[in-house]
Image 1 (tube, rainbow, N blue to C red):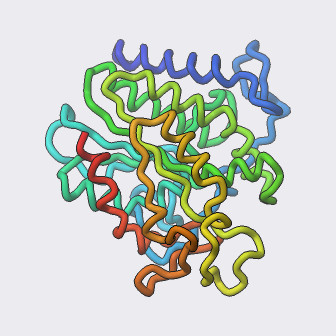
Image 2 (cartoon, one colour):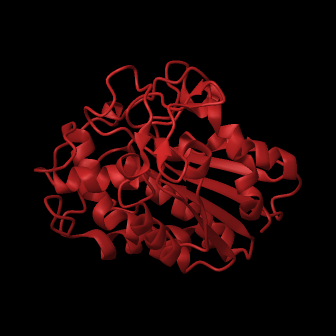
Length: 300
């Protein structure tokens, strides 16, 4: 049986999701039966991208042996230092949060801070209608309940939020062609991401840290195994717009673009290591270079 505090948090989570997102375009459901809408496509979460990573970022106990990023909604505890009353850092996001996780883990270990990761491919930080099928909807509720429970107990939590912000927008606007599953996720993110940021922003002793949009390779821009330098404006389109968007909704922005880009060009290699895994993902092997950027995030 749930404790009174957990029951309150669970009820609030359901109300937040339903009240905010009951009318997601194309995915709305009638609030009568309490069951998922029968006309909602039940896409498989296994359609989410698994980045072709040469290194394992998260432990196998969190991802499964055959994956590099989880495909199920569950917490992945990376470090645990001291009592549960100490400050905690949560990382919530998709593969764009995952690709920077080596830097976050390094800073957690350096500062002896407990770290819990909630990550799934193509599942940005969002709160969506709880009747939406799939693991990503579960993930949003799981993270919010986790953080809200700590807030109710007066425990300090920093939530690092990462997503392929420009990718989802490009899919919604039709400038990026993709799979049905990713198109569905992009549609859900339009309302789901702002809803998550609003809900978390209302929790006491909860600090939000946003990860800036990192470079991606536009279709047809790089013919040879993603090994080409690109104009920064092409690799990170509307960069300043996304920075302003994050700055309005979070307490701190971590921007690692300067480690892989000059003012004009985003580089194909960083100290001889390839910058990209594929068109959408940075190589996590370069992420430890970003670690100093997280000092303020872990400073509380």
